[in-house]
Length: 277
Image 1 (cartoon, one colour):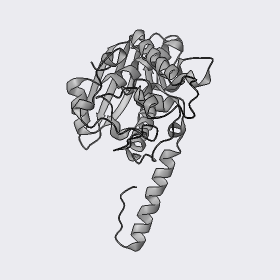
Image 2: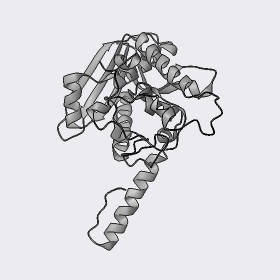
Image 3: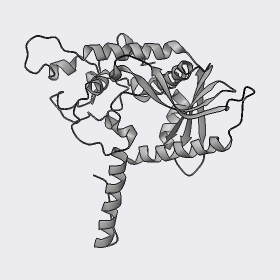
Image 4: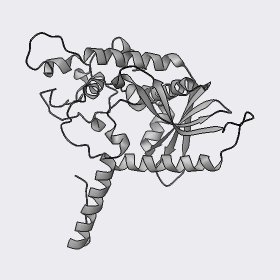
């Protein structure tokens, strides 16, 4: 539940109503209702979370982390307007910037395996794919010191692949971190676009999706704790923000307890070792 307070009984009622409006609008936004996985989710280091997602598994409880996405969506809209005002033409007459345009990262005859999303910005002049991240101060410092992490890095290259599929020739990907506090601080991470980063992530997603089809062994309910236990979690997972996080859960078919102790962390192997860099 949202934390609310009012100066009196009327103020409390008003605060509750505004909190309900914000929550309801956020959880019913098109992005929140999207079932098909997008570029931001493909690189999730937690294979179990990806399995839950690909199965459209019931969530143990409604997510309450709504205000950060609301603020982030507002910032993306602000940046869209800023670049629209600065739009210029290329020598061939095309607009320099592709702004918040839908790209198809991976077309597929099976609807559930299509990967597509809205790319924040593509600059045709510099051939750079941009992604905006509005973050808190501690997060910004972490990304400045240690890089964006594999999930964000994979997302950037997936959007690069989407731009390439749309006929562009991306040469770089860039993630722009902007601090979400009173002092303007901007940090940009960038590297050359690498199609293989995106293809490897899609191959991992396909392997997990294939594994989500249980063997026909006659069991009444194959999706039990043992089934979900075969998908490793990750020490890089952001459990607190996961829709299937259920602290203390002993039944993985109901929810995942996350990783709470070092000894619970799975050994890295296969693709899991690649995302731990």
